Length: 328
Image (tube, rainbow, N blue to C red):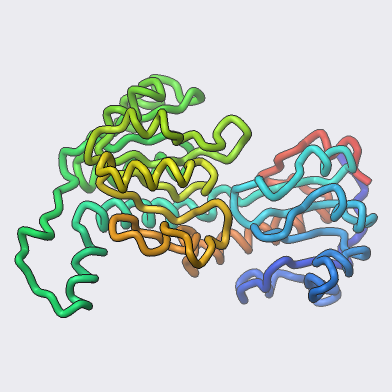
């Protein structure tokens, strides 16, 4: 169906793009960047017909109303918690994502955190930095082989984590995802179970679900109490999936052996947060998808969808198809 989109002349970029994506921007297109403080970032947004969005700016009704020419928001990545999709749809603004882009990098980062926790890499590094060398028994870790990995969410990243850990580390994989069929799980080599069973059976529990009102504080005091003594919790998805106070209590009490976190609530994490320097928590600053390969994929796919839209071609990863009926 044709929507007779006007020609793209103004593109607003939340963040600078890498060369691979930048070279896709037609030379006649004016590139706009967020306004400098104390102005709101969208102060210069009025001419923009498309936005390549990252994770920092809130794409809410106020921002959209400051951009009467806006037709499309292309989110670099998969998370939409900073994009008001309903507000966009009501205004005829199309939203799309790049869900394939971060899969490999985020999955590898998850497994890296898992292995670093199992091998007590943080503690060993701290001992070396402090001039210590032994006794080794004080830093004994564990093997991942044969252990149970619990996955909450079996989307693209969760499935890739399952594949790496099942084939590479010979771990047992148990997962909760109401959208996955028994046949699909069998093909993945994964056992499906209810949420509480997955939590209770995991030696390593990894979160791979989007942030919604239903998943906020998914891991609270009650669910953390269901975990095995000495288990580990991993989160490379969204910070608010975990109640941070409940996690700290579980780790400090010895209930959990530790945690690997790449996402936090809020972000950036306050400088005095105990999550930053806890001896049994590995914390990285939201960099799971932060590789050159991942960002090249995400940014180029975001730009490709922007250009396709203004050529009146299908948008590959459209989030709100109803917006096409209302397109400005």
